Amino acid sequence: MRWSFEELKRLETDCPCGEPHHAIPVERLEVGPGALDEAATWIKARFGRVVLVMDEHTRLAAGDALAQRLTDLGVVWTACIVEPNGQGDVVADEASIVQVLIACGPDVEALIAVGSGTLHDIARFASAKMRIPFVSVPTAPSVDGFTSAGAPLIVRGVKTTYQTHAPVAVFADTAVLEQAPKELVWAGFGDVLGKSTSLADWAFGALAAGEPYCSHLASLTREALETAVAEVRGLAEGRPDAIRHLMEALLLSGLVMLLFGQSHPASGGEHHLSHDWEMEFLRSGRRQILHGLKVGVACGVLADLYRSRVEEAVAAAAEAGLAPWASLAGREHEVRAIVASVPPGDRVRALMRQLGAPAEPEDLGIERSLVSSSLKRAHKLRNRYTMLRLLNDTNAI
Ligand SMILES: NC(=O)C1=CN([C@@H]2O[C@H](COP(=O)(O)OP(=O)(O)OC[C@H]3O[C@@H](n4cnc5c(N)ncnc54)[C@H](OP(=O)(O)O)[C@@H]3O)[C@@H](O)[C@H]2O)C=CC1
Ligand SMILES: O=C(CO)COP(=O)(O)O
Image (cartoon, rainbow, N blue to C red; front, top):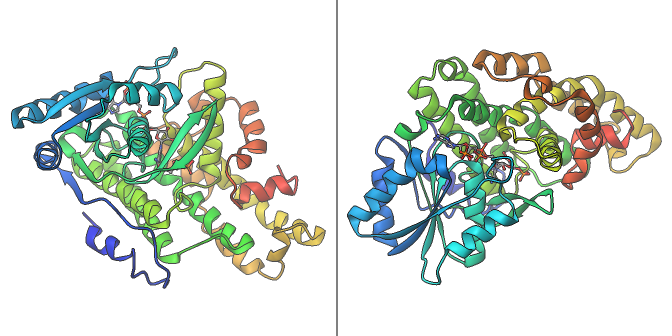
């Protein structure tokens, strides 16, 4: 691990910003070969009866192997194989959550999420409602949500995040992660690359509207971003050390969300665009695109817009006395520094291409007309003072 779990835990009460942060309830965090064995031993020591929440693919990737180990140790387990929707996608929605709740008897002591982002959010939400813990067993380095407490769910067609709880333990077996399809690795890279704009949006919201902010937590999320970017070649080659470092970057980003108590460090306008595309694909019955791929592509779209239009929009808002943006009058140099922290869109796209991943909306089958309409409504999905919201408030898009 390039960062220390113990040092992160200390930030709960002792951060350089001087403010207390939220607690990290994760008791054990293992990344490496053999983590599945450790998961089974740890679960045996803690619980007598568990439900493994997985889907057909993740069952094959790790679920069966974990179940065998649990059987050998005498842990009573049942499996809940979450069913895909009509398009073949497993979605974190009402139907999946009810399926898990039905699969759980009254004596279940914990849920074990065996899968990637979607299965974790289903297990996270269901276990929180049942007031039992959940254990994270990631099968791909595809999102930074393994260690977070937020559960982004599709409820009545709208992607809404509910703050629930973090896993009590995480066991990321690198032997499993190395076998994950390359698209899931690309998605994990895209999710971290999106921090290029989310970090800028977070700083901007703090400057313009006094949103809560911690520069130390921001620096940790930037460390996650830089770790992933430094590994782009290794990831393109599928090197095990690069995959491990990507996973560590994703876990770090999730832990920062956990400490902060909300997703601001990891989710800005690029996530809101991605969520809007996801909702539109569900509405129109299309197959889903991996979250991190959408985020990486949306990051390139917003990088272009932020670098070319934000300073002008701030000036227009100041002249019009438009709240809260007018408060930025006289703080242009700080706005300029935030805008300059966003890499050029071409750089974002070049990194995605270096990996072999989609870089433009068209590469994902997202039409320019959808990009245009999403840019005009995605900021409404969350109550955050992002630069995307400023551009909408000033009719700059
Ligand atoms: N809580 C949080 O803070 C965060 C949550 N998220 C959420 O996570 C979700 C996206 O998660 P993501 O991980 O990208 O995608 P999904 O979890 O939707 O995974 C896509 C599919 O990949 C397949 N899969 C996973 N691992 C393996 C493997 N080892 N081998 C073969 N197939 C595998 C699964 O099979 P199958 O084909 O059966 O579906 C899985 O359903 C979004 O809803 C997003 O909002 C994202 C970031 C943070
Ligand atoms: O996906 C996320 C971080 O990568 C979190 O998304 P939300 O901000 O929608 O909860």
